[in-house]
Image 1 (cartoon, rainbow, N blue to C red):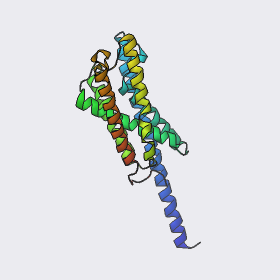
Image 2 (cartoon, helix red, strand yellow):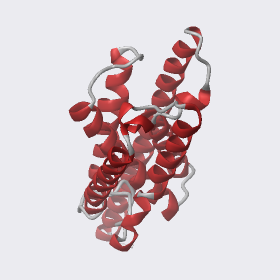
Image 3 (tube, rainbow, N blue to C red):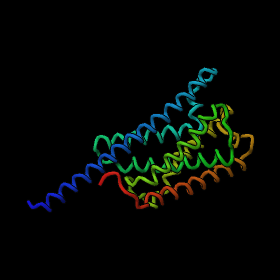
Image 4 (cartoon, one colour):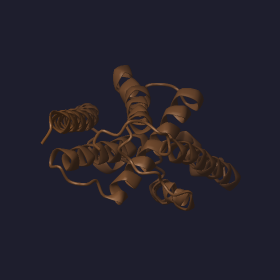
Length: 223
């Protein structure tokens, strides 16, 4: 083997090692990010328990809390696949895309339409409605280890939030509890219909952005 061949081989090995190191770093960051978000959710739930409200179903009836948990699980699972050196399955990348789109809607709705900390400490609201959505979105857009998502499957962003809406409206009709005022049954069917249509439109728009971002040509974490 000539000197030139050895140099090329060593260069290739060095580049491969650097890429694997970058992939491991990204995986660890995702896992830590997801774990920290879950810790924030657990802390906020602990405050509710201390205040005498331990209903876990109510707590995760909030779209923000539920979506943040799902996104955290998706991040941690994606990181674990990378750490183990296994290929990330397509369904998991799609799940990341769905939760990213939903978090975009969470951020826009909270910060533009219904700002306020509610019963949670202000810093918790900032983490869940600003910091975490931005981090997840930047990860999706700037790290090229996700496949391009098929435009024919853009509809997959809808089932999860629509099921959430259905459960919330059913609860509102049965026991009067809803997580957000705009879903109160007494506002009337026209108001509920308008808000659901608006939610579907926002989800499709956010999904289109996420689907388009999956086609951005950015460096992959591994070759």
